[in-house]
Amino acid sequence: VILDVKRSERSRPSVGRGRVRAAMVILDVKRSEKKNEFLYETTVKIGVGELLRDLCELHNLRLKVQRLALTCKELAKHGPIRPEETRGISEEISTRTELDVHAYGQPTNPDEHGYRTGCPPPPEVGEVLSRTAEEAETAVSAELVAQRRTLDKATCQSLIDNMRGAVMIAYPAFHRLPVYDPTRMELEDKEELDGASDLQAVLDHTQTNLWWAGKELQTTSTLEQYVGRNEKTKIITKLAPRSAGAPVREPRIDEDTHKAMMAHYYKKQEEQKKLQADEDDSYLDAEWANPKALKDSSSAAAGPCRGGPEADEATGASRSCMSRRVGDPIEDFLPFLWNHAGCLLALALSRAPSELQAWQPVSRVLT
Image (tube, rainbow, N blue to C red; front, side):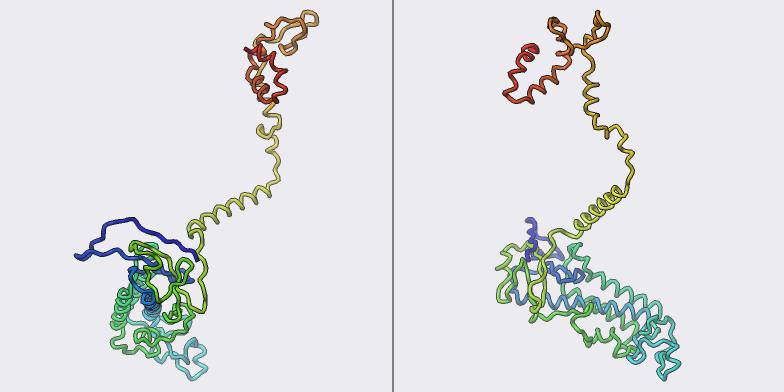
């Protein structure tokens, strides 16, 4: 896999919070899905094994933030989840069974899918919970890559703590929040992950490889042995399970260029379809479609000789300078040569060298 390596220009160290911040290596970490992309900041002195462990932990924390934000928004909207035996059961079906779908309480905002109780927290508390969850989703979004903002484990942990505080406001000490609710299970680190579903593709650093530029980075080496000593470097890496082999190649063109190319060729294709369906041949009557237009324009541009047509005394018919008869003086033929000198020279230059001998009299006359 051949990927881009970008080296930034030399610049002075940035100053933040009263201390000088040293330049760091930027890793654009990707997986097979674009939504799991993020930027990570490190140094070339770090070992690949330690770097791989940090990247896997950050990837798993980022997924945890996304899962917790999703469950918090559902909790603020429709309340806790129902027991497993009553999930998906409607009120009509519950009248024919002994199961009570309203055991938690009378729903104020029923869930159309029948998976939650429909008893959300008070509106003002639910708004705080929803806003906190949305801020957490934005803070770990894949759009941070386009904004050139890095992500670290401390940021993810702070987002989890913020959502924990919002949940505690709505359900103090998890009161009336069942132990099987996804939000509580996430906060207590008791979530059940299959490793393959959406937002559950967690990684184990012992079963994961780090790839860059078509090479698998060995855990016994340092990052400096691969990218050099320059700290101001940006590389594109990929996390892939060991059982999956090498990841797929990066596209040669970026997404915006690909969209522009597809739009251009689609427009050309539609124009070609319209031309094929158009059977109108009225354009053949246009002036530009006349096959003799060049000849007519040349004749019109040349015009008659400067002396004008001469009247034949015997017949009264007019003749041009081109119809010169034997015995006519050369002065009568000079006006034609003067008007058509350019055409004669072009015609003479287009002849083969063997044919130029026949044009020597004309050349002498023009001279």
